[in-house]
Structure formats: structure tokens, C-alpha cells
Image (cartoon, rainbow, N blue to C red; front, side, top):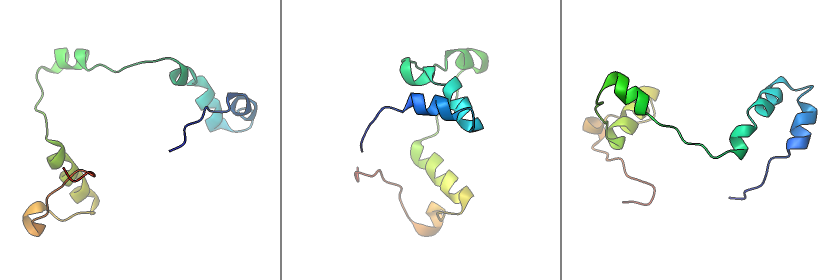
Length: 84
């Protein structure tokens, strides 16, 4: 995958005419400043949360969207892309 910088000058110039680009310009600092998200205040407010295994979460999501059969019906097992 090729990685390149966004053409901020062009985006700022076109932001006068493209409303969604105007919003991107407002969020430009997020592309330049390192940042991280923390769930510390959420954990303090709610206490310990049950962690759902990724296989269970992915299968439930795919079932809800109609993209996969339930494991009991198909006997399928969700695996990672590298086969591990």
C-alpha cells in the first residue's frame, strides 16, 4: 500500500466549495499530532466490563448483517487472515 501526504493546500482551497472538505480541514490537526484514546474514565464510571472474544463478536456481527450462518448451523470456525 502506498502512503502519501494529503494535499492540504488543495483541500483548503476546495473547502470553499465542498462542505465535507471544510470539515476535514477543521480536523487537520488529527493528522499531524500523535494521539491515543483511553478508556480509563469509562472504566471508572462503569467498573469492570466483560470482554467479548473477537471470534464471538465477529460471528455475531456477520450473522446480524446476514453475511454468515450461525456456527452451530454451518460448523464454520472464524480464523484470522494468516490462518492462525
